Length: 475
Image (cartoon, rainbow, N blue to C red):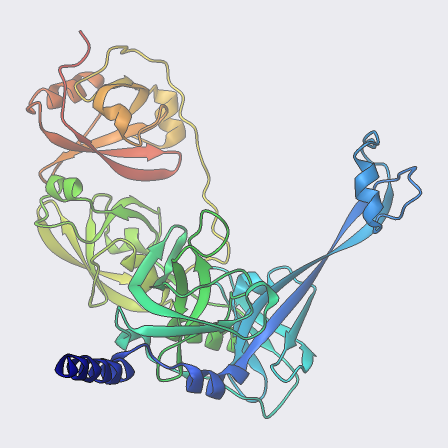
């Protein structure tokens, strides 16, 4: 019995020692050293409206007002006296320099009439917004102070998935709250966020954390906490941070000129799926598929064509379509670069001069209308008609068929009535479509289980749509 107890005691001591050396990390020293460089940011936005006149003997700020207001008839439009309303919000930030430059998110200070920065020593300063870039969600502030504590900056490129990271911020206004987790993924592309390769973590981030720093275990800032993925509005285990190297490039431009200059090449792209790769003769799904080229833009001048797959830009591999906007955006306007494209089964190198992206891009949408002359569906399940000469002139098209109805396998795609089918692609061969008869003749050459890709125009935007499997058409 004594031997058993001794063995158990020895195991407990050994396990305890291992737990001490291999257990959870200790964040206390990191927080003590760098927590003072994290700030709370509060903003105020003033909007004008009309307060509703009420016969109630209560002021609108009185708790009884809301209770009795429910039983009163609604006031008519335009009634009430003019009144200003204050909207307040909270966020976080961190001090970059001892003389008062602070980084936060652009959405934290967006449309704010007043920005107040509160330090950990309870001092408060009104901040000036030096500049904000909505595309990257980075903003630079300045307060009139000196001798401030600052953060150290790290290198996100050496950050590893699974590595411990820590966030400090003000969730729901609770100053200098500390949360920790691991890096879940790197280089995440989010919808409508093509210019940032986000760091994904499972660090608890909530409203108020936005703009705060994400630290590695060395106490270096490697990201700016920016977004969460949530169905409830609160933290659900997935949060995203802007890599600090990208954020610093943005802040350098904001500090120098108050704005950010980005490169552009004038194309609309989409992801290369496995089916699209097969249609274009690629050995694997990679690159950015060009669905449309801007007339007179840098890409057209360089010789880029719809249907090209961009696999390399300025010596950098384009593995996913989300890589291209980020790389092009970070290229200085006026730079001459080499791009590699896959076209009709072989590679081709082109030379392109990067242009500058406008501050606010707007795309016009045009509607195509045509009189249907073919009411039966083809083997793809599409009812198509030929464009009239007037419509071709209006849309500036020499080819294309209008989709009148969508049936069969095509109904499971993103195709819509009113789309114009410009071309059919299969195994790297592109066929421009001019007549309904020609379209049906081309489709008759494929087997039932064939996969084909269509080049489709919707308004001013072109895209590629893949349809798996053909049927026999309407009988």
